[in-house]
Length: 175
Length: 145
Image (cartoon, rainbow over all chains, first blue to last red; front, side):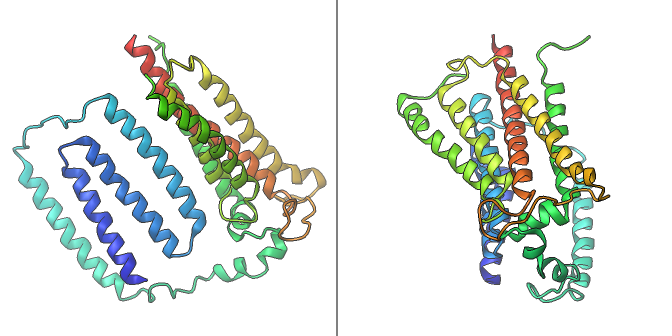
């Protein structure tokens, strides 16, 4: 299973790189879709169908909206002059990549084997959750009973986002 | 925004109802099978987005629909908060108290308050995503005239 996840992760990285460098904006948007649908397959392989359902639906709707926007505006990316101080950015990026790679290598030695980590809070949640919440789906029991505050926060974030969109996109602006 | 061809319009009219029913199924069975309020709400809003994109917003005469959908969204988040507080009416000082009878595990009407939370969070998610989409579409209509 690790080999399959590694192959899909490599595909997702290639898709993201292609989305940055594509000339045609429609193909860039579709290459963005590779990242999302690859994540769906990773969730299914890791046995998380709840997350996979949410991810596949949200990815489809955001892709539809982005394709509609690209088809109604322009498909060509506007040409921009190369930055004269681009080498500073390149040197900074290379330095950051080396530093991050070093620390990731150091941190990898202290992690557990993939898929065998023992979380301290997982046991009390799983044991007897069906009797405590009465819900056959453990995820719903955790989301709406044990972690109710988190769910209320997520729903409130969505309401706040809609309020922001309606404020910015109102038809008549105030002076 | 103009609609698509006749084939696309007829196919979406046939399919959108099934998509809507599937979203309701996902929400109502949220405490039994994978899924729940968030996934089902996005599926329900997807059925509306499918219809609007296929038929075009000038065919459906959309002008102020987003004021209605944002009202549903705010009302349902208010109901979720009231349901969370409702356990305190009986003296228990616990937020998100599951005070309804649990029933037998695995039946449709069971798990106390969890199906109610699922239903209202589903309405909230569906209405908010539909509101964002309608705000984008209708604003573009006003600019192009």
